Length: 88
Image (cartoon, rainbow, N blue to C red; front, side):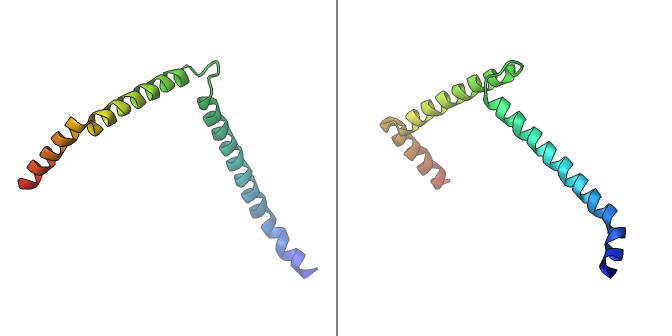
């Protein structure tokens, strides 16, 4: 029973740590909920639709740039540009 005398003064520290841990867990759950809501089109999240439109626009731009770069004429011009840069 001597160990009980040592544990009683440490109890507030353990409870404080438990309180901090549970508060952190609740904040993490709230952040996860926010991320899930941003991924879905829900009322009150008008920015979500705008972000999806912007993402589609950027994907289209990247596809266009990839097409330009992989075009045979574009590849030759790109090779010439690289050669010019090496000569400097």
